[in-house]
Length: 399
Image 1: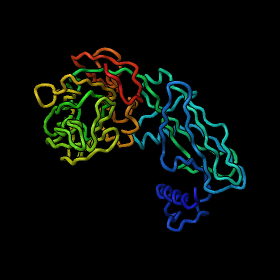
Image 2: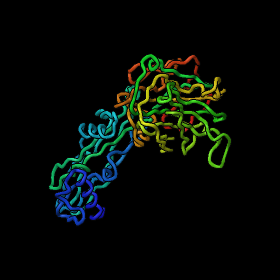
Image 3: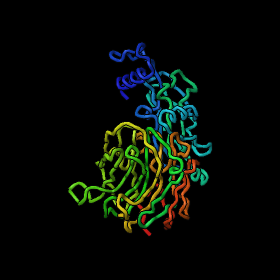
Image 4: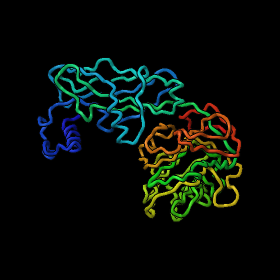
């Protein structure tokens, strides 16, 4: 890394830390900041996600640099640090827990030799998760901190830590319905819950988009609390989208928004609606797909219903096949990065997670709330269970 680029980065962190009175970034002098060690990956973010394979070990790398060369060798080690993970969870609204000992291997020695700026890439091994870990539904991470063992150049406080998000490939079963199952959470009806802001998410696969007004999610109530996510427009194929491939939000006061991205049949895809109390924002497969201003106010969840009838008295789902997984309701605004990083799994203990259905029971037509808050989903429809689905699969064959 060039010296002046690093100075700019140090200035940025100085401002963040409130050190503007000590460091003037307009005419920064390198000597003012001294020489520091840092993790290169931490310059562009506080974390990275690693997919952990189902067997054996998976590997990632980190790079340790100095802001200037040293006349002597400097020796470091990477250690795990719970406080780093706690801070990450607090800032990002996540619920990651520490990867257990025995499921990772850190480099034993890290040396930046005299006259050099950096080490070779450091290899970090992550071991395949146990069945117990995968069934727990927890999200795991490895928070590391760079520590000086011998030498004179200390790690930078901000860029000397990093969080590796360890996402395992999960094998699961999912229920397949033919036509609308109309999954209902009766607890919301019996004891409605009101949120000033919220996020609704679901991952699913449909066989076709052959008709309009196919409801993915409904929340019955007055105009102030009305929510309907449905396949609707366009009414016929056009140069941009296939007919009925846009999942539209019809919300407060019957205001609506069509997303700028469409759904494709026969593929696993993700839908998220985020409401901050004054606007709706739709995400399709983690991509920001449109925002709509709405009258300010809270929303009461009183009649939660997944994949139900639309506004008509009969189901427009017809004989369309539906596979579903990872449905959630939050009482917080989820950010784009949170949505993108947690499509296939999230910790049931995550802050603001009010209801979470993983649909991985493997049998029956009753689906438990993984949060333990009792928002059980039920249906009179009988699904066909499809086994052996991997969280990394782009599509699942129909039965």
